[in-house]
Amino acid sequence: MEHVKENGRASSAVVWASLGAAGVFEALTVLATQDKSVRAASPWQDDPYDVMVSLAQFAVPMLALVIASRLLAWRAPGGVDRVRQTVRAAGAMVTLVGLTVVSEWAAVVARAPAASSGTWASVLIGGLVVNSVLTVAVAVLLVRGHRGHRGHGPAGPWRHDWLGDAVFLCRRIPVLRRGAGPDAAVWVRRHTMTVFVTLSTLAAAALTSAQAIGEGWTDPLLTAWFLVVTATSDLAFCVISNAVAGFVARPPRTRARRIAEASAVAGCVAISVATAFRDALWPVFGTGTLTSVPALAALTLGAGLATSLVTAALLLACFPYDVSGSRRRFGGAAPLRRPDKHR
Image (cartoon, rainbow, N blue to C red; front, side, top):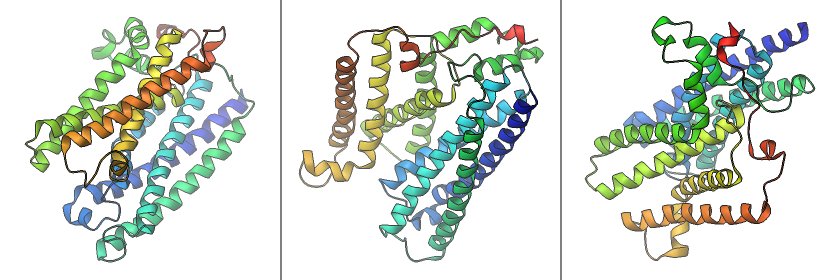
């Protein structure tokens, strides 16, 4: 028991370090993307680099928010799962920051616009150096913490999740107690994809509205395309991060549903990749410069559809039958304890 407490304290320190690094990254990223004069001098203002920066700009603070919120329930029942899940979420957040840092360095090395001159460019590159050092340092701490946790705690499906902690906390707030019961948690677990799609669409609609107003868009097809690209990117982020960190411990699903979800996520990722590298991909399928919105939509959404279909075909070929024990292969959870038993 004492060893578990020591691991919990060490993991908490690593999580706080991760949150600190994420805060520095977010501050510098907002500066580089939201101030017009700074953005004009940014080495990574154009795609494919900007796609990664844009994703991290919104995903990193969302992960940081849920991680910081869960620290409020750090000493609640289910500490072993909580430590593992929170550290994994911090690892996912730091990985996302690291991939963005690599993308930004690639822009600097490629000598993208304004990458080698100007005061703001120098400031941004200096900030990139700071982000790189912090990211490497936190990544080392996370790797050491992971090694230190090997052999401690269960390696099977989760018995507690972040949703259970949310219910645990809400049931102690009189205003939220009635709507945050076990039945609501059960419904969310059974309809996780519906919840993810809804949240992704709402977030994408808000971002698309802000982008359309800020840029003065008048083309409805361009607005619709941006909404789809943003929503699919958000959906892929939700599903993948949930698989890593166990935000919602989902019940076992049928083989057909698992394949459908995996194929959909693969298609969503392909849309983001095609959007980032659209100028490099266009010569393979068309001629001239990619300036038409219908052509842009056909290229990016077509890539997503093709990837989704190929992924489904491969999964059907590799896993022709549903077998026992597939819960761990495709993802599932052990029966979760009811939050009211935590009292």
